[in-house]
Image (cartoon, rainbow, N blue to C red; front, side, top):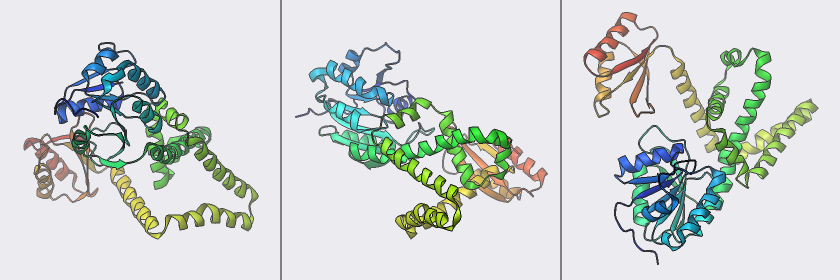
Length: 376
């Protein structure tokens, strides 16, 4: 039987801590849970040997590239021998079946984790999904519950195989369509005047797709390659996706009412029936909300303010200034910088008197409410 944790404050070990999420997790454990974190980056940090890490870490977390994770776990399993007994091993990989199976060859308790987000700018995962695959948990169950609660994530339990099948759709299909869009635009946009010439003609759908595509292209390409190549459920998904694109292309080439009817039936009517009325209504409403958000963020009539006091009442003091200056507000949006600073983007009526806007900006600084970062 597994032995209970030796301490209510276990030492956390992270293998691959140079990864972006590994760095976020290190900060989370140290600042949010008050735990000591040690680590070894397999890409070059030899300050702590694998043997020392196995010996000293009560909770060992593998945060490495997908294609390297299973071999890395196997290396640590062989080195640990019986020393993993009574400890907890976790991984943060975007696939779950292979790394979880590899960890189960050890004598540690085993949980697979998949944060469905890039490392956030916030101190917790509040509002984000964390998939949890409990493979072998006994003595560490209470601590695991405490850790998951501290993340404030929307935790979704799944079996590793179930997770990977769903990820072929949620990640694999979504990424594939955006990569294909990016490659297509690379070929077609130059003859249309470039992306800048296309942008003024944007629809909400085009703009949303463009945001996701550019986000992917700005990120680490190895991550997106591994998600496609390392999940065995991705190839059959791609076959189906390609078949539907081919079907659409062939019907458009064919032309005529029969081709149109066939396209509508297979690609619109049948999926519409599958989704159902409630889901379609929710999707339409969500699309409208995103459209409003894009409109707010595109408005030039706004100021951005950093509030140094992130506490109840700070926003009320800020809004009081606009009320006193008789400025009607259109929108309020908050965000955090990579350093965790709380920023508010205040959109106001474009017809507002320019002198009143200047007075409001001055009052925000003079009263010590915040620091105006940008204004239009």
